[in-house]
Amino acid sequence: MELSEEDTKLLFSLLKLNMKKIVLTGPTGAGKTTIFKLIFPYDEKNLAEVDRKIEKEQKTEISISQVAKDQFKDSTTTVSFNVTSVVACIDRANRMHLFHLRGDLGFLIENEYDYILPMQIVDLAGQDRFSFMVETMVKGASGAILVADGTNVSSINRLPEFKEYIRDEELRTGRKIETVAFVNKSDMREQNLYVGSEIARSALPQEIPVFETTIYDKDTLIFPIRQLIVKTFDDPLNNEKLKEYLRKMKQVKRK
Ligand SMILES: Nc1nc2c(ncn2[C@@H]2O[C@H](COP(=O)(O)OP(=O)(O)OP(=O)(O)O)[C@@H](O)[C@H]2O)c(=O)[nH]1
Ligand SMILES: [Mg+2]
Image 1 (cartoon, helix red, strand yellow):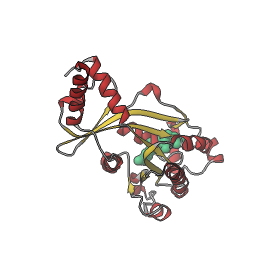
Image 2: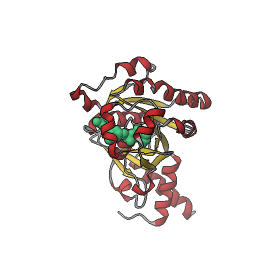
Image 3: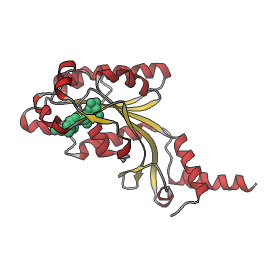
Image 4: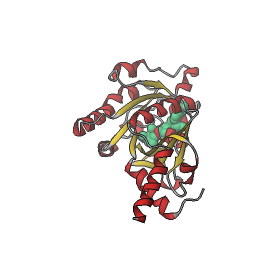
C-alpha cells in the first residue's frame, strides 16, 4: 500500500518520537560491527570502517588472540561509530522482522504487527582511543549490548569498564538501561579456543543476562536481541495505534 506523502510524514514523526536508542559496545575485535551488519539493515555507504592495523594495535591494546589474528587479515575496525534507524516488527507468530526506517511505510499499516518498535542502533568503536565516544554515545540510550571476544580472557575482563559507562548514564538520567552481554565467537569452542561465559557472569552484575553467541548461528544473536528490544519498550506501538493516529490526525485537519 502506498501511503500519501502526508501520512508518511505523520508516521515518520510518530516513529521518531517513539524511537529508542540501543548501543553495541565492548572492546575492540569483539565482533560488534559483524553483529550489527548481520542483524540490522543499514546503509553500506555510511559505515565508518577502516583497515585494521593488527600489529600496531597489538602493541597498544589488549587482546586479539592468535587465532583471531588470522581472521583479522582482511578485517576492519570501526572509527567513531556506525548508526542505522530500523523498525522491529513482531507478528502474531511472535517472529521479529527488521526493516530499515526510510522510504515507504505502507507495510506498517498493511500488516498486523503486535509490536512496532522503532530504534536507532549504534555500533561503537571499541578501541581505547575512542572511549570518549562511548561516553558520549551512551547518552540517551535505552538498551545496551555489551560484546566481548570469547576467545580472549582480557577482552571479557574488560566488560565491566563498558558497563560503567552504562551505569553512569543510568545515574545521570535515573532511568534503567536494559543491558545484555554477549560472549561472542562461541564457534571457536570446536578448536578449544572459546573460554565460555562463566568469567563474564562473575565479572558483571547478576542482573545482566550473559549469552554465548556466534555470527555463524544467527539464532544465538536474534533471541537475546529480541528479548532486549521488547523489554526496552514499555508502551509499544502497534498496527492499530498507527492507524488510529492517522485517522485522528485527519479528523483534526478537517475541523
Ligand atoms: N570466529 C568468529 N569470528 C568472529 C565472530 N564475530 C566476529 N568475528 C571476527 O572478529 C573480527 C572482529 O570483528 P569486528 O566486528 O570488526 O569487531 P568490533 O567489535 O566491531 O571491533 P572494533 O570496531 O574495533 O571495536 C572480524 O575478523 C570478524 O570476522 C564470531 O562469532 N566468530
Ligand atoms: Mg567495529
